Image 1 (tube, rainbow, N blue to C red):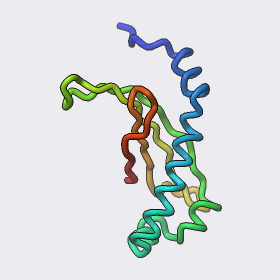
Image 2: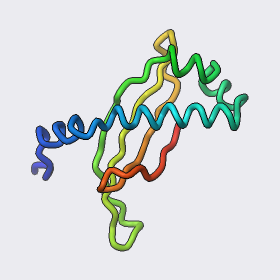
Image 3: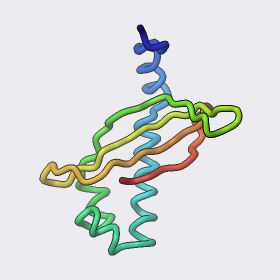
Image 4: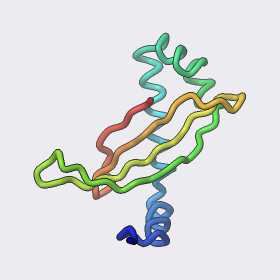
Length: 112
């Protein structure tokens, strides 16, 4: 069985729409807001303040997926883009995921 997605066209779509760049922008906004709202929780999770995380940690593009949620009526197609966060010693700390609708409008995000 073959997945009904053309891998080359999907890669071109990711690049054409700058999905990782767009998601990194959302990630930076998320980190700033998280730090402003809960600085202690932020530092407990990421071991530094927002400025250090944003300017010296590594953000590694991890993946993009197309999904269909049957929770909605009619079912909703959406795109997930996730970026991993590594500290200065290359230790994995967290994964940020942004969700976009079929028109690439930002829906929501999460950090885990």
